[in-house]
Length: 292
Image (cartoon, rainbow, N blue to C red; front, side):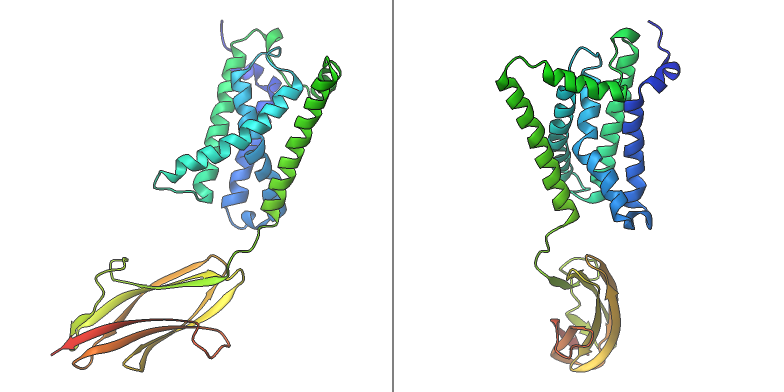
């Protein structure tokens, strides 16, 4: 059978919408300033997480119109999507990318678009009169008819229960996404060696020799915070800096100091203040031995 995909594509509006929604979601999550428009992110993101992956998978597995009825397709689309998304996240956890927003979005988008394209190819290989095609008005009518056609009261109760469960799952997920719970408020404050690891600190120097450390601050205060950084060597201030960070933003920078006189156990202090507060908020120190 000869495939004529370009001719038939407009009839597969459901798959075209799946791909369109998925592609639209990417810039509104990753690209500033588009990713700052929260309502649009939610409108595009929720279907990508809760419906589109499962729908694309069902479309690929069951391309014929008689394979499943309307209610079954919708219910399985939600159910499989809720299962697929965490499984993809679990798989990413064992890769160098980890469970972060960008890798999850990309993997979920590639998964959904690939299945939608596969579903389109499978439909193209089936006679036109047997293909599943969504005519949206007729689709909702068929869902209504399939509900009326259930044989017993038990079947109807189970169908209604399934629909209610899906609605509750969607509502709870939307609530969690739109109103995230604040966790513990704190600030990460650390000093690393010149290699970016918690080792090889410059604790043994000669007079006039430079030592280097990397100072890092991460804001987990659920608010914008301006910090004041102060570095002292033997009580003498050798460095100061003002650092403004948004929630979950990280600042990291190398700091170089020079040993001016010989002596053991010279104290290098790294102090962090919150703007407008005199008391030290976080403090770290190193003991440095300086030889002639």
